[in-house]
Length: 333
Image (cartoon, rainbow, N blue to C red; front, side, top):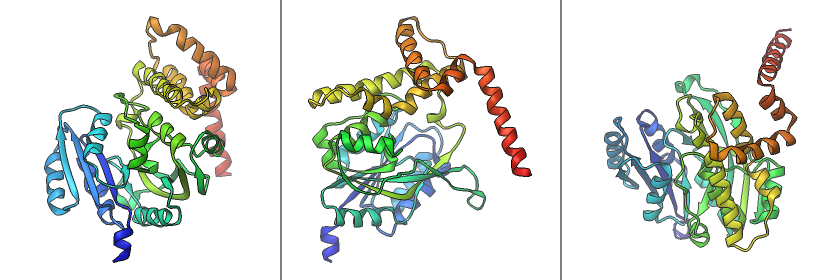
């Protein structure tokens, strides 16, 4: 009985848009936890498949689940709406086409008991191709290479970056609702990179961050995923919007400007901008030419690989293909 009185409550928030084939696996992975969440909020973002009908059936089956419906407004608007009615002490943002390991919340509860000041519980993930259960192979993905408790702030974030543990995605952390409210962080109305400035603010202001080597999240890989559609300039523009938000956050909180911290935190996205522009032959609007030229000089000046990929794409692709063939040949031998 005393465990129930001291148990930290958890709300899971799941935006959904046309994820009907995977919803049941996602919800079942939550209610099947060894320590299930207290509240599950699914926000249907104007789905055109049979998601709503399926979610209504699941809500009848699971009393802790609430279904909200809205017109298509994007993932940021859906998450914000979920936060408005969330009652849990901690919030977990999950994608509707993924699932979680059954000990996630029990292990979180143990970490919270051991570290009462914890405001972020951070962990790793595994990725799998969208195949039937018996055919799946789970590969390490977004691993946390740190373990234990650390104070939030720039020193820890720098340590996270150098240890490849500063993940910018929401689903790799369980977050204190009080931390979200205290920091006043909100989701930007963009489709890509909206997680990054949100997590940056939380890493910088959390009282205590606890890291686990465990991989609790299972990320489904699908070629048609919205997050993988990076063929327009908006994907690049959203990087500058996200990074600008983090810069503004630091100024608003009286934190010293730290170009290294921002560059390294956003490095995968920054480098990704050049990769996507080259891969998809993206047209750069005239008013963005100076900004993009500066980005190109910065990235190609830092990375020989990116310099080769940007200025000599044919040579780069040929070397990459040759390396792949050589690896296969060596493996056969």
